[in-house]
Image 1 (cartoon, rainbow, N blue to C red):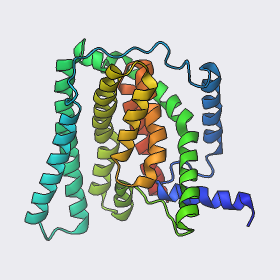
Image 2: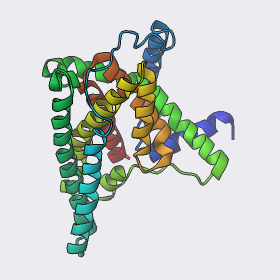
Image 3: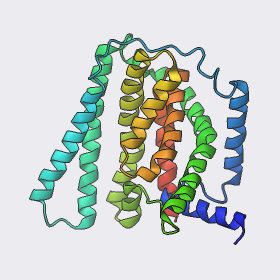
Length: 290
């Protein structure tokens, strides 16, 4: 088997493992993303000048504030899932999956409401200072598409490298596992489950996670460090490791760095929210097409 055939196998397996984020036929998109990323590198001196005009968002958050909505979310989801699991013991598997996503969705909504309350209380200019200005939504959506396209080659590269080193270390049986929600949406054909998972993954969780990680954590870190990139990197690392599958961390780190950059560059939370939502939507569509 020649080198190109081996690489093609890694790419195909990487697609299957993470929901086929980039298809083999998607050469045009990958090439466009590479071109955009290359232009960005040239214009910013390899990223050194990319955030030269970025300033920390003024806030008076104590260090514990970002952990409050995170703990509320985890506590609500784990406690409610445990209680319902003991009460509703005979539910069919697809109904259990539906109920678990209802709990996940409600928990994210509750935690997001807490996040908004905390941001309103601790940020200068309140929610606008937090990055939620409805007037920028149309610009942020367009920019999010460009940002996601630009980081797409990096995410792809991280997937391929993960498969390569995984097989190098653990052997040819190493496989990248799908995200749990992608497994569920392909495993169960019942329409209510698929609709709820799509709503949770595309509309609910990205909003909460970006308000939490970019809005609270990254803003707090920026208050502690003078430069934006260390805050983006630390926040992105925390974001990646909160996901259960360790093999996904390199790709998630690359994606999260893009979302952190978009927040620092624009000052708008809508931009990383759109990037996150579009990425999840593409993952679900790709998983359902398999």
